[in-house]
View 1 (cartoon, rainbow, N blue to C red):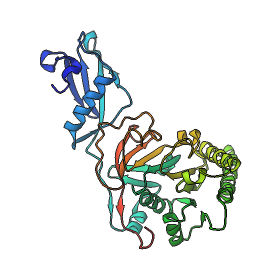
View 2 (cartoon, rainbow, N blue to C red):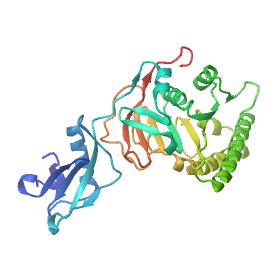
View 3 (cartoon, rainbow, N blue to C red):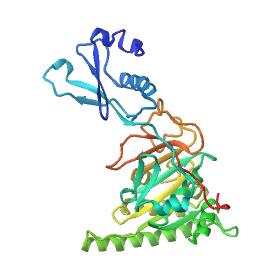
Length: 343
C-alpha cells in the first residue's frame, strides 16, 4: 500500500508481486507481465519503506542502483527479483572505560570500530576521516592512533600543532608540525622529505618481496591531520611534489604494509589527488550527513533513507575488503577515556 502510485495500485493481494525472506536479506519478486516499471525508482522506494519497518532488528544495506538477482525456476514470469541485503541489528557504539587496557586486550592487528565491526589492519590500504569542525574527527583520530601504536610505526604530521601532537608527546613519538618562524612552503617541503624517505622504504621492501614473497613487514602508517591545510596556500611546485609523493605511496604501499591515515574537512581534488582517493579502502564521514558532504568520499551514494543516530562521532563508514559488506553503514565512533591534556 505504501508504494502507492509507484506500482499503480497493484498489491500482493492481486498477485502482482511476492516477497521472500532469506538469511542475508529479502527478495521482491515481480510477477510478469505487470503494469509497473521495475527500475531504480521502484527499488529505492521499497528500500525507504522497508528500512524504517525493519529498524532496529535489521539494517538494510544501501545500494547505488537496483540489485537484480536471478531465481532458480523455470517459470518465466518469476525468474528475476530485486534483492535487498541486510545485516542483523543496528550499529552500536563501543564504550571503553580504560583505553590503555582496551588497546592491550585486543588481538593484533585488529581494530574494533563498533559492536560487530572490526578492521583487520593487514587488509587496510589507507584510511580517510572527513567531517566538519566539531564533528569529532580529532577524537576518532586519537582512538586510531592509540590502536595503531602497538601494531605500526607512525609518522605524524600535524599542521595545527593540536591534539595529535599532544598524544604524540604523551607516547614519545616525534611529530612534524609547523613552527611560527617558518613559511607554509618550507613546512610542506619538510613533509615531502619525510614522504620521500617513506617511498625509499617502499622500494627497499619491494626488492625484499621480489626475493621472498612471504616476508612479513612491520606496518608503517603516515598520519596527516587536516591535509587540506597543507595544500591551500602552498607554492605550486611544492604542492605538486606533495601530491605526487602521496599518490606514489598510496599506489605502491599496499603490498609493503605502508599506509596513509588522512584527516580533512573534505576530500575534494584540492586536498588530495584523485588517485589517492581511489586507493582508500576505509572511508569515514563524521558529522553532518547529506548529499553535499558525502559527494567526495561516496560520490555514488544518495544517503536518503540511511538511519544515522544523533550525537557526536556519528556518520557513515565503508570498508572495501573481502570481509565486510561493501555497502556504506551507519557509524558510531567509540566512546573512550584518555589522559587529561590530550583532548
